[in-house]
Image (cartoon, rainbow, N blue to C red; front, side, top):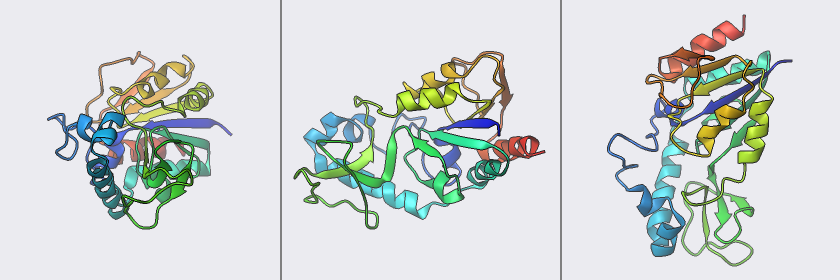
Length: 227
């Protein structure tokens, strides 16, 4: 069974109504990244950061997977598929994808604020201030912030190196180290990029470019691959 590796970014979830991480004004849901997505922000104002991610979690739970998520799940009928996602939502899983690696964590879990390896399920959409992990530290969203290590990057690089087919969906390739994963794919591996605006970075001529939104482009490519 051939191995397909799919690297997904914010563009695939945008069509489910989730705002992309960086809109054209440089803000995320009206906030500067430095206010809500760094360890320094948490140290400065943990209640604000907690509220921000509680609202993002509420948005995620209210969102539904779109045609692109479902199409990628359909690939499992014929291929060994691993999805490596930069997204913190659970839409791939809800669409039926079984092997999903979250580079930047998943917002539907909480983690200890002193040991990120201690993670917990969340009841509902809210983590309250005063909810503690087993070490006695405040629980926070299981999300990798700017300035924090990306613990899954080594595993993701290894997965990309094993791809028989590589598909990149909805990523601007602007956030490192995730953007560097394309360089681990073997030169001879067929590669596809699907995005309404193909980023002009780090891509060689071995990429087949599909300049469409994820919902249209992914469905089209999956139909071809399933023949």
